[in-house]
Length: 499
Image (cartoon, rainbow, N blue to C red; front, side):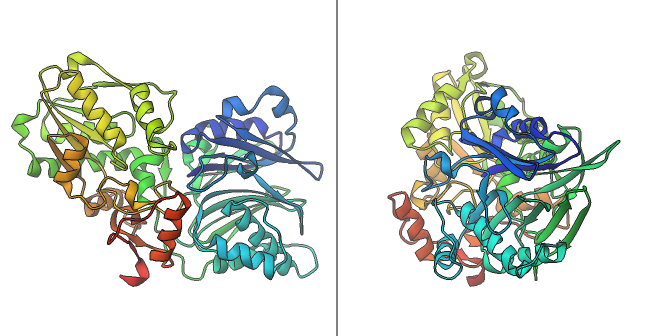
Protein backbone atom coordinates (compact mmCIF):
# COMPACT_ATOMS: atom_id res chain seq x y z
CA UNK A 1 0.00 0.00 0.00
CA UNK A 2 1.34 3.41 -0.95
CA UNK A 3 0.27 7.01 -1.28
CA UNK A 4 0.87 8.93 -4.50
CA UNK A 5 0.41 12.54 -5.59
CA UNK A 6 0.98 14.63 -8.71
CA UNK A 7 0.76 18.40 -9.12
CA UNK A 8 0.62 20.53 -12.29
CA UNK A 9 0.78 24.21 -11.34
CA UNK A 10 1.96 27.63 -12.47
CA UNK A 11 4.55 27.97 -9.71
CA UNK A 12 6.97 25.80 -7.73
CA UNK A 13 5.37 22.54 -6.56
CA UNK A 14 8.01 21.04 -4.26
CA UNK A 15 6.39 22.37 -1.08
CA UNK A 16 2.90 21.36 -2.24
CA UNK A 17 4.05 17.81 -2.90
CA UNK A 18 5.86 17.66 0.43
CA UNK A 19 2.77 18.86 2.29
CA UNK A 20 0.51 16.39 0.48
CA UNK A 21 2.85 13.50 1.26
CA UNK A 22 2.67 14.41 4.94
CA UNK A 23 -1.11 14.03 4.64
CA UNK A 24 -0.63 10.60 3.04
CA UNK A 25 2.05 9.41 5.47
CA UNK A 26 -0.35 6.83 6.96
CA UNK A 27 -0.23 4.95 3.65
CA UNK A 28 3.49 4.20 3.93
CA UNK A 29 6.33 4.88 6.32
CA UNK A 30 9.15 2.94 4.65
CA UNK A 31 10.32 5.44 2.03
CA UNK A 32 9.39 8.73 0.37
CA UNK A 33 10.34 10.43 -2.88
CA UNK A 34 9.63 13.47 -5.06
CA UNK A 35 10.41 14.12 -8.74
CA UNK A 36 9.87 17.51 -10.40
CA UNK A 37 10.19 18.78 -13.95
CA UNK A 38 12.08 22.00 -14.73
CA UNK A 39 13.68 23.36 -17.92
CA UNK A 40 13.39 20.00 -19.70
CA UNK A 41 15.12 18.24 -16.80
CA UNK A 42 13.75 15.89 -14.16
CA UNK A 43 14.95 16.41 -10.60
CA UNK A 44 14.49 13.61 -8.09
CA UNK A 45 15.21 12.76 -4.49
CA UNK A 46 14.09 9.68 -2.55
CA UNK A 47 15.22 7.82 0.55
CA UNK A 48 14.09 5.49 3.32
CA UNK A 49 12.17 7.05 6.18
CA UNK A 50 9.27 9.34 7.00
CA UNK A 51 8.63 12.39 4.85
CA UNK A 52 9.79 14.79 7.54
CA UNK A 53 13.09 12.89 7.88
CA UNK A 54 13.78 12.27 4.20
CA UNK A 55 13.56 15.85 2.93
CA UNK A 56 15.86 18.58 4.22
CA UNK A 57 16.16 22.15 2.99
CA UNK A 58 18.94 21.22 0.60
CA UNK A 59 16.82 18.43 -0.88
CA UNK A 60 13.86 20.74 -1.41
CA UNK A 61 16.07 23.31 -3.15
CA UNK A 62 17.19 20.61 -5.55
CA UNK A 63 13.57 20.06 -6.66
CA UNK A 64 12.60 23.12 -8.75
CA UNK A 65 9.76 23.06 -11.23
CA UNK A 66 6.07 23.75 -11.74
CA UNK A 67 5.03 20.10 -12.02
CA UNK A 68 5.98 17.01 -10.11
CA UNK A 69 4.93 13.88 -8.33
CA UNK A 70 5.66 12.04 -5.11
CA UNK A 71 5.10 8.82 -3.23
CA UNK A 72 5.15 7.38 0.26
CA UNK A 73 5.78 3.65 0.32
CA UNK A 74 5.60 0.63 2.48
CA UNK A 75 7.14 -2.54 1.09
CA UNK A 76 5.19 -5.69 0.30
CA UNK A 77 6.43 -9.25 0.65
CA UNK A 78 9.64 -10.04 -1.18
CA UNK A 79 10.58 -6.43 -1.86
CA UNK A 80 14.12 -5.24 -1.38
CA UNK A 81 15.41 -2.94 1.33
CA UNK A 82 17.33 -1.04 -1.33
CA UNK A 83 16.40 2.58 -1.93
CA UNK A 84 16.47 1.69 -5.64
CA UNK A 85 12.95 0.29 -5.17
CA UNK A 86 11.68 3.50 -3.60
CA UNK A 87 9.69 5.70 -5.93
CA UNK A 88 9.44 7.72 -8.14
CA UNK A 89 10.97 5.61 -10.89
CA UNK A 90 12.52 7.06 -14.04
CA UNK A 91 13.11 5.79 -17.54
CA UNK A 92 14.78 7.83 -20.28
CA UNK A 93 13.40 6.12 -23.38
CA UNK A 94 11.52 6.79 -25.48
CA UNK A 95 10.45 10.16 -24.07
CA UNK A 96 11.71 10.39 -20.48
CA UNK A 97 9.16 9.47 -17.83
CA UNK A 98 8.95 9.75 -14.05
CA UNK A 99 6.40 7.46 -12.47
CA UNK A 100 4.66 6.60 -9.18
CA UNK A 101 2.38 3.64 -8.60
CA UNK A 102 0.09 2.39 -5.83
CA UNK A 103 -1.01 -1.23 -6.04
CA UNK A 104 0.42 -4.55 -7.11
CA UNK A 105 0.59 -6.29 -10.47
CA UNK A 106 -0.29 -9.96 -10.36
CA UNK A 107 1.39 -10.78 -13.70
CA UNK A 108 4.54 -8.70 -13.29
CA UNK A 109 6.88 -11.68 -13.69
CA UNK A 110 5.37 -12.57 -17.07
CA UNK A 111 5.49 -8.93 -18.11
CA UNK A 112 9.14 -8.62 -17.07
CA UNK A 113 10.05 -11.65 -19.18
CA UNK A 114 8.16 -10.26 -22.18
CA UNK A 115 9.80 -6.86 -21.76
CA UNK A 116 13.23 -8.50 -21.94
CA UNK A 117 12.59 -11.04 -24.70
CA UNK A 118 10.18 -9.11 -26.94
CA UNK A 119 10.42 -5.42 -26.13
CA UNK A 120 14.17 -5.44 -25.36
CA UNK A 121 13.77 -3.43 -22.18
CA UNK A 122 15.88 -4.15 -19.10
CA UNK A 123 14.37 -4.14 -15.59
CA UNK A 124 16.92 -3.37 -12.89
CA UNK A 125 14.92 -4.14 -9.71
CA UNK A 126 12.38 -6.67 -8.47
CA UNK A 127 9.70 -3.97 -8.30
CA UNK A 128 6.46 -4.51 -10.18
CA UNK A 129 6.25 -0.71 -10.42
CA UNK A 130 9.36 -0.58 -12.59
CA UNK A 131 7.81 -3.27 -14.77
CA UNK A 132 4.61 -1.26 -15.13
CA UNK A 133 6.61 1.88 -15.98
CA UNK A 134 8.44 0.06 -18.75
CA UNK A 135 5.23 -1.43 -20.13
CA UNK A 136 3.79 2.09 -20.28
CA UNK A 137 6.96 3.49 -21.87
CA UNK A 138 7.00 0.74 -24.48
CA UNK A 139 3.35 1.30 -25.36
CA UNK A 140 3.99 5.05 -25.68
CA UNK A 141 6.76 4.29 -28.14
CA UNK A 142 4.50 2.05 -30.19
CA UNK A 143 1.63 4.55 -30.10
CA UNK A 144 3.88 7.42 -31.22
CA UNK A 145 5.11 5.23 -34.12
CA UNK A 146 8.38 7.10 -34.40
CA UNK A 147 6.81 10.54 -34.19
CA UNK A 148 5.77 12.92 -31.43
CA UNK A 149 3.04 12.27 -28.89
CA UNK A 150 -0.46 13.67 -28.82
CA UNK A 151 -3.33 12.93 -26.49
CA UNK A 152 -4.68 10.20 -28.78
CA UNK A 153 -1.34 8.37 -28.65
CA UNK A 154 -1.13 8.75 -24.86
CA UNK A 155 -4.62 7.36 -24.36
CA UNK A 156 -3.90 4.54 -26.81
CA UNK A 157 -0.84 3.64 -24.74
CA UNK A 158 -2.92 3.51 -21.56
CA UNK A 159 -5.44 1.27 -23.32
CA UNK A 160 -2.60 -1.10 -24.21
CA UNK A 161 -1.40 -1.09 -20.60
CA UNK A 162 -4.89 -2.12 -19.50
CA UNK A 163 -4.81 -5.02 -21.94
CA UNK A 164 -1.40 -6.23 -20.77
CA UNK A 165 -1.34 -5.56 -17.03
CA UNK A 166 -3.28 -7.48 -14.39
CA UNK A 167 -3.82 -6.51 -10.79
CA UNK A 168 -4.28 -3.22 -9.00
CA UNK A 169 -2.69 0.03 -10.09
CA UNK A 170 -3.23 3.73 -9.65
CA UNK A 171 -0.54 5.60 -11.58
CA UNK A 172 0.70 9.17 -12.02
CA UNK A 173 3.46 9.88 -14.54
CA UNK A 174 5.27 12.86 -16.02
CA UNK A 175 6.27 12.68 -19.69
CA UNK A 176 9.15 15.04 -20.49
CA UNK A 177 8.04 18.04 -22.57
CA UNK A 178 4.45 16.79 -22.78
CA UNK A 179 2.75 16.84 -19.40
CA UNK A 180 1.26 14.62 -16.73
CA UNK A 181 -0.87 11.51 -17.14
CA UNK A 182 -2.76 9.53 -14.53
CA UNK A 183 -4.77 6.34 -14.80
CA UNK A 184 -6.48 3.70 -12.71
CA UNK A 185 -6.91 -0.03 -13.31
CA UNK A 186 -10.20 -1.18 -14.92
CA UNK A 187 -11.58 -2.35 -11.56
CA UNK A 188 -10.62 0.78 -9.65
CA UNK A 189 -9.16 -1.39 -6.89
CA UNK A 190 -6.78 1.32 -5.68
CA UNK A 191 -8.04 4.88 -5.18
CA UNK A 192 -7.12 8.00 -7.14
CA UNK A 193 -8.83 11.38 -7.20
CA UNK A 194 -8.54 14.73 -8.99
CA UNK A 195 -8.58 18.21 -7.50
CA UNK A 196 -8.18 21.76 -8.80
CA UNK A 197 -7.63 25.32 -7.66
CA UNK A 198 -8.16 28.55 -9.59
CA UNK A 199 -5.35 31.08 -9.53
CA UNK A 200 -4.57 34.30 -11.37
CA UNK A 201 -2.46 32.21 -13.75
CA UNK A 202 -5.23 29.70 -14.48
CA UNK A 203 -6.32 26.34 -13.15
CA UNK A 204 -3.85 24.21 -11.22
CA UNK A 205 -4.36 20.47 -10.79
CA UNK A 206 -3.55 17.85 -8.18
CA UNK A 207 -4.03 14.07 -8.27
CA UNK A 208 -3.73 11.99 -5.13
CA UNK A 209 -4.58 8.67 -3.51
CA UNK A 210 -6.94 10.35 -1.03
CA UNK A 211 -8.99 13.55 -1.10
CA UNK A 212 -7.47 14.71 2.19
CA UNK A 213 -4.21 15.39 0.34
CA UNK A 214 -6.10 17.74 -1.99
CA UNK A 215 -8.23 19.60 0.52
CA UNK A 216 -5.39 19.82 3.02
CA UNK A 217 -3.38 21.75 0.41
CA UNK A 218 -6.19 24.12 -0.54
CA UNK A 219 -7.42 22.26 -3.62
CA UNK A 220 -11.07 21.37 -4.23
CA UNK A 221 -11.99 17.77 -4.87
CA UNK A 222 -13.34 17.57 -8.42
CA UNK A 223 -14.01 13.83 -8.61
CA UNK A 224 -12.50 10.39 -8.42
CA UNK A 225 -10.66 9.03 -11.42
CA UNK A 226 -12.92 6.41 -12.91
CA UNK A 227 -11.81 2.77 -13.25
CA UNK A 228 -9.95 2.41 -16.54
CA UNK A 229 -9.92 6.16 -17.11
CA UNK A 230 -6.85 8.19 -18.04
CA UNK A 231 -6.37 11.91 -17.40
CA UNK A 232 -3.84 14.02 -19.29
CA UNK A 233 -2.74 17.51 -18.24
CA UNK A 234 -0.56 19.30 -20.79
CA UNK A 235 2.18 21.84 -20.12
CA UNK A 236 -0.33 24.70 -20.35
CA UNK A 237 -2.60 23.19 -17.70
CA UNK A 238 -5.28 21.93 -20.07
CA UNK A 239 -6.94 18.76 -18.77
CA UNK A 240 -8.57 16.07 -20.91
CA UNK A 241 -9.75 12.59 -19.98
CA UNK A 242 -10.83 9.42 -21.74
CA UNK A 243 -12.08 5.98 -20.81
CA UNK A 244 -9.34 3.57 -21.91
CA UNK A 245 -10.64 0.20 -20.71
CA UNK A 246 -13.02 -2.08 -22.56
CA UNK A 247 -15.19 -3.20 -19.65
CA UNK A 248 -14.48 -1.05 -16.58
CA UNK A 249 -16.32 -1.88 -13.37
CA UNK A 250 -15.85 -0.04 -10.08
CA UNK A 251 -14.72 -2.68 -7.58
CA UNK A 252 -12.79 -0.83 -4.86
CA UNK A 253 -10.77 -2.55 -2.17
CA UNK A 254 -13.02 -2.84 0.88
CA UNK A 255 -10.00 -2.74 3.20
CA UNK A 256 -9.42 0.89 2.24
CA UNK A 257 -12.68 1.75 4.02
CA UNK A 258 -12.00 -0.52 6.99
CA UNK A 259 -8.45 0.43 7.79
CA UNK A 260 -6.14 2.24 5.41
CA UNK A 261 -7.82 5.50 4.42
CA UNK A 262 -7.96 8.48 6.74
CA UNK A 263 -11.40 9.13 8.24
CA UNK A 264 -11.52 12.63 6.72
CA UNK A 265 -11.17 11.23 3.20
CA UNK A 266 -13.89 10.94 0.55
CA UNK A 267 -13.25 7.87 -1.59
CA UNK A 268 -15.38 6.91 -4.58
CA UNK A 269 -18.17 9.10 -3.27
CA UNK A 270 -18.05 7.65 0.25
CA UNK A 271 -17.06 9.40 3.46
CA UNK A 272 -14.65 7.06 5.23
CA UNK A 273 -15.81 8.36 8.60
CA UNK A 274 -19.48 7.77 7.79
CA UNK A 275 -18.70 4.31 6.45
CA UNK A 276 -17.01 3.40 9.74
CA UNK A 277 -19.99 4.71 11.67
CA UNK A 278 -22.19 2.44 9.57
CA UNK A 279 -19.86 -0.47 10.28
CA UNK A 280 -20.47 0.13 13.99
CA UNK A 281 -24.24 0.06 13.44
CA UNK A 282 -24.15 -3.30 11.69
CA UNK A 283 -21.57 -4.72 14.09
CA UNK A 284 -23.74 -3.67 17.02
CA UNK A 285 -26.58 -5.81 15.70
CA UNK A 286 -24.24 -8.81 15.50
CA UNK A 287 -22.96 -8.20 19.02
CA UNK A 288 -26.52 -8.08 20.34
CA UNK A 289 -27.15 -11.52 18.83
CA UNK A 290 -23.92 -13.13 19.96
CA UNK A 291 -23.26 -11.71 23.44
CA UNK A 292 -25.27 -10.98 26.57
CA UNK A 293 -25.40 -7.20 26.62
CA UNK A 294 -26.15 -7.16 30.33
CA UNK A 295 -22.69 -8.55 30.97
CA UNK A 296 -20.93 -5.70 29.14
CA UNK A 297 -20.05 -2.69 31.29
CA UNK A 298 -18.20 -0.59 28.77
CA UNK A 299 -17.22 -0.40 25.07
CA UNK A 300 -13.66 0.65 24.23
CA UNK A 301 -12.01 1.26 20.84
CA UNK A 302 -8.52 0.20 19.86
CA UNK A 303 -7.30 3.58 18.59
CA UNK A 304 -7.49 5.05 16.08
CA UNK A 305 -9.31 3.67 13.04
CA UNK A 306 -11.88 1.70 15.06
CA UNK A 307 -13.04 4.71 17.09
CA UNK A 308 -16.05 5.68 14.88
CA UNK A 309 -17.29 2.07 14.77
CA UNK A 310 -16.93 1.67 18.53
CA UNK A 311 -18.76 4.91 19.28
CA UNK A 312 -21.65 4.01 17.01
CA UNK A 313 -21.83 0.45 18.35
CA UNK A 314 -22.03 1.75 21.92
CA UNK A 315 -24.75 4.26 21.00
CA UNK A 316 -26.80 1.64 19.16
CA UNK A 317 -26.66 -0.81 22.07
CA UNK A 318 -27.04 1.89 24.77
CA UNK A 319 -23.73 0.92 26.36
CA UNK A 320 -21.16 3.16 28.02
CA UNK A 321 -18.30 4.27 25.78
CA UNK A 322 -14.87 4.94 27.27
CA UNK A 323 -11.33 5.46 26.04
CA UNK A 324 -9.18 2.87 27.78
CA UNK A 325 -6.06 2.90 25.63
CA UNK A 326 -3.71 5.78 24.90
CA UNK A 327 -1.84 5.60 21.60
CA UNK A 328 1.76 6.59 20.97
CA UNK A 329 1.46 8.13 17.52
CA UNK A 330 5.12 7.68 16.72
CA UNK A 331 4.91 3.90 16.30
CA UNK A 332 3.99 2.58 12.87
CA UNK A 333 1.18 0.22 11.94
CA UNK A 334 1.86 -3.17 13.45
CA UNK A 335 0.37 -5.67 11.02
CA UNK A 336 2.56 -4.31 8.19
CA UNK A 337 5.73 -4.48 10.27
CA UNK A 338 8.19 -7.23 9.34
CA UNK A 339 8.60 -10.05 11.83
CA UNK A 340 6.44 -11.38 14.64
CA UNK A 341 8.80 -10.27 17.42
CA UNK A 342 8.94 -6.71 16.10
CA UNK A 343 5.14 -6.52 15.85
CA UNK A 344 4.66 -7.90 19.36
CA UNK A 345 7.11 -5.44 20.88
CA UNK A 346 5.63 -2.50 19.00
CA UNK A 347 2.11 -3.16 20.34
CA UNK A 348 3.29 -2.54 23.90
CA UNK A 349 5.13 0.55 22.76
CA UNK A 350 2.18 1.83 20.76
CA UNK A 351 -0.61 1.40 23.33
CA UNK A 352 -0.84 1.85 27.07
CA UNK A 353 -3.88 1.07 29.22
CA UNK A 354 -5.59 3.38 31.71
CA UNK A 355 -6.00 0.98 34.63
CA UNK A 356 -8.99 2.73 36.25
CA UNK A 357 -11.06 2.27 33.08
CA UNK A 358 -10.59 -1.51 33.18
CA UNK A 359 -10.48 -2.42 36.85
CA UNK A 360 -13.29 -4.81 37.76
CA UNK A 361 -15.20 -4.26 34.51
CA UNK A 362 -16.42 -6.47 31.69
CA UNK A 363 -15.13 -4.67 28.59
CA UNK A 364 -15.97 -5.00 24.92
CA UNK A 365 -12.95 -4.04 22.83
CA UNK A 366 -13.64 -2.95 19.25
CA UNK A 367 -10.95 -3.07 16.57
CA UNK A 368 -11.12 -2.48 12.83
CA UNK A 369 -9.91 -5.99 11.98
CA UNK A 370 -7.94 -9.01 13.16
CA UNK A 371 -5.21 -10.08 10.77
CA UNK A 372 -2.37 -12.08 12.31
CA UNK A 373 -3.83 -11.80 15.80
CA UNK A 374 -0.58 -10.58 17.35
CA UNK A 375 -1.96 -7.15 18.18
CA UNK A 376 -5.30 -8.50 19.42
CA UNK A 377 -3.65 -11.03 21.74
CA UNK A 378 -1.38 -8.39 23.26
CA UNK A 379 -4.28 -5.96 23.73
CA UNK A 380 -6.43 -8.56 25.50
CA UNK A 381 -3.49 -9.35 27.78
CA UNK A 382 -3.05 -5.65 28.51
CA UNK A 383 -6.74 -5.28 29.38
CA UNK A 384 -6.56 -8.20 31.81
CA UNK A 385 -3.35 -6.87 33.34
CA UNK A 386 -5.11 -3.53 33.87
CA UNK A 387 -7.77 -5.29 35.95
CA UNK A 388 -10.54 -6.18 33.50
CA UNK A 389 -12.91 -8.88 34.75
CA UNK A 390 -13.94 -10.19 31.33
CA UNK A 391 -12.66 -9.13 27.91
CA UNK A 392 -14.86 -9.45 24.84
CA UNK A 393 -13.64 -8.54 21.37
CA UNK A 394 -15.48 -7.28 18.28
CA UNK A 395 -14.04 -6.79 14.81
CA UNK A 396 -15.54 -4.23 12.43
CA UNK A 397 -14.33 -6.46 9.58
CA UNK A 398 -15.00 -10.13 8.87
CA UNK A 399 -12.44 -12.84 9.52
CA UNK A 400 -9.37 -12.38 7.31
CA UNK A 401 -8.81 -15.85 5.85
CA UNK A 402 -7.08 -15.26 2.50
CA UNK A 403 -4.03 -13.39 1.24
CA UNK A 404 -4.40 -10.03 -0.46
CA UNK A 405 -2.51 -9.88 -3.75
CA UNK A 406 -3.37 -6.30 -4.74
CA UNK A 407 -0.95 -4.33 -2.60
CA UNK A 408 -1.72 -5.10 1.05
CA UNK A 409 0.98 -7.08 2.83
CA UNK A 410 -1.08 -10.14 3.82
CA UNK A 411 0.59 -12.63 1.53
CA UNK A 412 0.19 -16.03 3.20
CA UNK A 413 -2.71 -17.83 4.79
CA UNK A 414 -0.49 -19.51 7.36
CA UNK A 415 0.12 -16.09 8.94
CA UNK A 416 -3.59 -15.30 9.27
CA UNK A 417 -5.07 -16.28 12.61
CA UNK A 418 -8.53 -17.07 11.16
CA UNK A 419 -7.19 -19.57 8.63
CA UNK A 420 -8.40 -23.02 9.65
CA UNK A 421 -10.10 -21.70 12.82
CA UNK A 422 -13.69 -20.85 13.60
CA UNK A 423 -14.72 -17.83 15.67
CA UNK A 424 -14.53 -19.65 19.02
CA UNK A 425 -11.07 -20.95 18.23
CA UNK A 426 -9.84 -17.47 17.28
CA UNK A 427 -11.30 -16.12 20.53
CA UNK A 428 -9.28 -18.68 22.47
CA UNK A 429 -6.15 -17.87 20.49
CA UNK A 430 -6.35 -14.16 21.35
CA UNK A 431 -7.47 -14.88 24.93
CA UNK A 432 -10.90 -13.24 24.68
CA UNK A 433 -14.02 -14.38 26.56
CA UNK A 434 -16.04 -13.87 23.40
CA UNK A 435 -15.48 -12.70 19.81
CA UNK A 436 -17.84 -11.18 17.26
CA UNK A 437 -16.92 -10.62 13.62
CA UNK A 438 -18.69 -8.33 11.17
CA UNK A 439 -20.58 -10.15 8.42
CA UNK A 440 -19.11 -9.46 4.96
CA UNK A 441 -22.54 -8.60 3.55
CA UNK A 442 -23.00 -6.04 6.33
CA UNK A 443 -19.54 -4.57 5.78
CA UNK A 444 -20.16 -4.08 2.09
CA UNK A 445 -23.65 -2.71 2.72
CA UNK A 446 -22.29 -0.21 5.24
CA UNK A 447 -20.35 1.35 2.35
CA UNK A 448 -23.01 0.84 -0.30
CA UNK A 449 -25.51 2.69 1.91
CA UNK A 450 -23.45 5.81 1.22
CA UNK A 451 -22.98 5.19 -2.51
CA UNK A 452 -25.42 2.69 -4.06
CA UNK A 453 -23.52 2.94 -7.37
CA UNK A 454 -20.82 0.67 -5.95
CA UNK A 455 -22.23 -2.72 -6.90
CA UNK A 456 -19.29 -4.88 -5.86
CA UNK A 457 -16.06 -4.76 -3.86
CA UNK A 458 -12.62 -6.31 -3.93
CA UNK A 459 -13.06 -8.38 -0.75
CA UNK A 460 -10.68 -11.23 -1.48
CA UNK A 461 -9.01 -11.26 1.94
CA UNK A 462 -12.43 -12.14 3.39
CA UNK A 463 -14.01 -14.35 0.72
CA UNK A 464 -11.09 -15.55 -1.43
CA UNK A 465 -12.61 -14.19 -4.66
CA UNK A 466 -10.02 -12.36 -6.75
CA UNK A 467 -11.67 -9.98 -9.17
CA UNK A 468 -8.90 -10.04 -11.77
CA UNK A 469 -9.58 -13.73 -12.39
CA UNK A 470 -5.91 -14.74 -12.64
CA UNK A 471 -5.13 -15.97 -9.12
CA UNK A 472 -4.82 -19.72 -8.60
CA UNK A 473 -3.10 -22.14 -6.20
CA UNK A 474 0.19 -21.90 -8.08
CA UNK A 475 0.22 -18.13 -7.71
CA UNK A 476 -0.44 -18.30 -3.96
CA UNK A 477 2.17 -21.04 -3.60
CA UNK A 478 4.73 -18.75 -5.25
CA UNK A 479 3.79 -15.91 -2.93
CA UNK A 480 4.26 -18.18 0.06
CA UNK A 481 7.68 -19.30 -1.11
CA UNK A 482 8.69 -15.65 -1.47
CA UNK A 483 8.40 -15.38 2.30
CA UNK A 484 9.73 -18.84 3.00
CA UNK A 485 6.25 -20.05 4.01
CA UNK A 486 3.73 -22.45 2.55
CA UNK A 487 0.00 -21.78 2.23
CA UNK A 488 -2.34 -23.63 4.55
CA UNK A 489 -3.48 -26.94 3.08
CA UNK A 490 -7.06 -27.03 1.88
CA UNK A 491 -7.53 -23.28 2.30
CA UNK A 492 -6.69 -22.05 -1.17
CA UNK A 493 -8.70 -19.11 -2.41
CA UNK A 494 -10.14 -19.04 -5.91
CA UNK A 495 -10.39 -16.35 -8.52
CA UNK A 496 -13.74 -14.79 -9.29
CA UNK A 497 -13.62 -16.44 -12.69
CA UNK A 498 -13.92 -19.82 -10.97
CA UNK A 499 -16.89 -19.03 -8.73
